[in-house]
Length: 87
Image 1 (cartoon, rainbow, N blue to C red):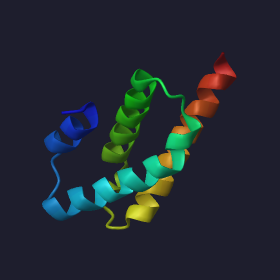
Image 2: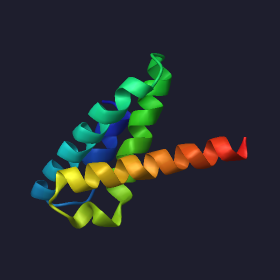
Image 3: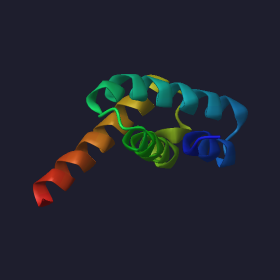
């Protein structure tokens, strides 16, 4: 079981919310996966961070997967911009 699957399996949400969050993860991942390298460790690390972002968003109570995915992508992009600005 991957880190992402473990995170979602341990999440405390009702089944419908987990389904929406899973769809949000898949939508967000589809938008960002092409921007990553091909090293499996980098890909898995990015997937794990994305899952954590989605599961920790205040909007995770929403039933709008598109909104959750867009917010998660904004958070991920903001984190990337902030990390590159420091280095």
